[in-house]
Image (cartoon, rainbow over all chains, first blue to last red; front, side, top):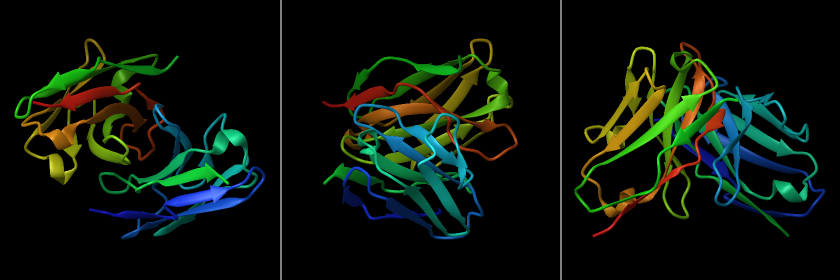
Length: 106
Length: 121
């Protein structure tokens, strides 16, 4: 099975900060990687597919990059509604999720 | 609009089985994969399985093989997830989510509201 390791697991930041979350795959997955945002009590929301394709309606402050084994999700200027947990997911071989990154207000 | 609607909460005893349904609407059911994902209390997301609603073919994560069955009913655009030999560690919210168009790779863009399954004696 392909393992995904997110870092950091926990991130404390302020409104307006630029933050980056990394997702590393245990083997190459080309660009079959997605990023999700989840708020407490809600289903996950798809932000980015194919490593860098922003979903319709998702603010442009979110961006994704990477290929192969290393990927990043960047939020260019944090807004209050961005404080949530973020997950990466690979869809190259079956599927797996990263363990999540909890983003909290400093 | 595109949506997937799941069945209600369940409480089961250890050793029992649970069957959760997921009804799709607003799109051609047989054209898109459907996934099952679960989330234990306070934990992360765990991918369980995928079904091709057109052919009924399924694949699942290794840890669930032998006790997870995913089926579909094309007449009602419904996918079913049945997990047997339940144990306390199976207590979780179970989500269905629409995947990519069949024969393509893609992410999960429409999620159900989740079904709480509680396993307790």
